[in-house]
Length: 447
Image 1: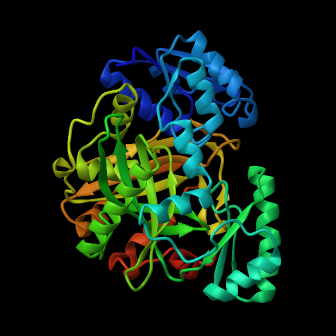
Image 2: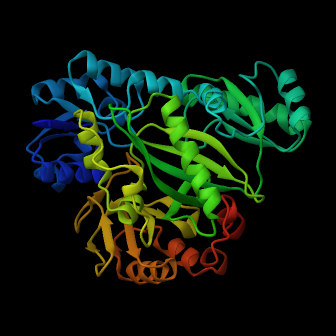
């Protein structure tokens, strides 16, 4: 086991990793920008180093500064969390070249899966279903039109690099396709420095379901069941849950087994998430692999009882998985609401500022993962998420009731948050019946 780990991140996930390390007896080195100087969670780390000004490109994303902090801190490994450098294969390579372990997959596995077009080909070879689409990258509008007519409209144009909904456009006809290709390519080049695109059929009214996996360096690969992530707005998840409601057992089993095949084919190690869409006929298709820990990992922890952060660290340190597939339960129902400093009544406008009073809900089966506290100032420089409210109960019905109660107890005086939209969603009959799809929020709430 490692003696010291640097956490190349901030906020909620940095605190989550610090806590896991403390329980493992591992010392931690935190980093922070000038905007995060004085954050209370930094006091829980054994050491903390400033890596630059508020702008993330000059601090949390500045590889040289992060690696320098790791060397000064005399660490054996770096945990990247999610976001920032978590899926940066170059950062991964540099860490390893400096004899510092990267707590995540190898750079080679990252490169195989980071390019969505290559990942599609890998999935096809591993007998993992993919959405009908182009065999490779689309080089011209003429080629895009030909493929669209072959697979049928509507089609989805997707950037080969990146994620988060950037470089994605839906086209319903020839004219819309030409414009969509240009827009997607321009956006992808600006966001990722790579304007390469591919095309696939757009699956309407689809569900977004992902499978958590763990793979060690001894050939062991297991899944930790699925998470439903269909409650989204503009490709950004709002609520996640496990197990996915109204999912037939045969589909659940086949999807989880396909995720394991995908991870084995990619020669992937550590924690990862294989994402799928599910159509109304019950067909599922591979989307991508997220080569890192996910924001929504707590719902999986709640239903399985497995600490995913500790598992990541142990795998990176060379330990074999201490359990087999048959040992992993899926008990009860867990739901997570992302609490963002945004105003849903005004188009989800960011709401930075000081939290004058924070009241955290409690009770059996309630968990609040957050670095925020009374007096904490939400910075405009970073992601607006200030915490994650998670509940776990014996049934989904009980979990919904528990979450509604917990949301009523949560207080963040001084800023607006997404709590009101969560309350509306949880009380809506479509959500209660488990009948949502990825566009349901946008159809139901137009703001």
